[in-house]
Length: 150
Image (cartoon, rainbow, N blue to C red; front, side):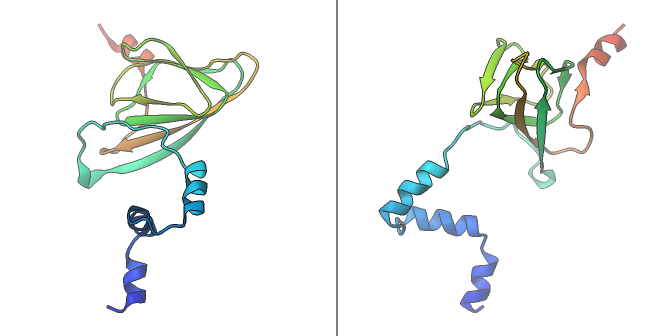
C-alpha cells in the first residue's frame, strides 16, 4: 500500500493523538490547543452491546420557565449545557442547577424527575449525547408509567 493510501485509511483523529503523544507539535501550537479544547466530562459508561452502538446528539432548548415532564431514557445520556442554566433531578440525586459549560450524566432507565430551565426570564440550551445499544424511542414519559400502575 503506498503511503498516500495508508494516510487516507487512518482516521485523522488517530493521527492527531499519535502526533501529540510523540510531542511533535511546536510549543506555541500546544498552548493554542489547550485553550481551544478542554475535557468537560469524564464518565464511566454502563455495559452495552458494542456491536449495536449508535450515538444520537439532541439539541434541547427551553424557553424561560419551560420544563419537560418526568421521563426516562433507555440509553445512557451525557448532557452539556451550552447556554443559560438548567435544573435537573436524576434518580435519587439532589436537584442540581447546571450552568453553561457544565455537564451531567443520566444512567439508562433512571427517572429524570426534573428537567427545566432554571430561569424564568432567560432561555437555556443543552446538548444531550445518547449512547444507545437498542432501537426505540429515546425517552418515555414517566407520568404514563404512574397511570398504568394498578
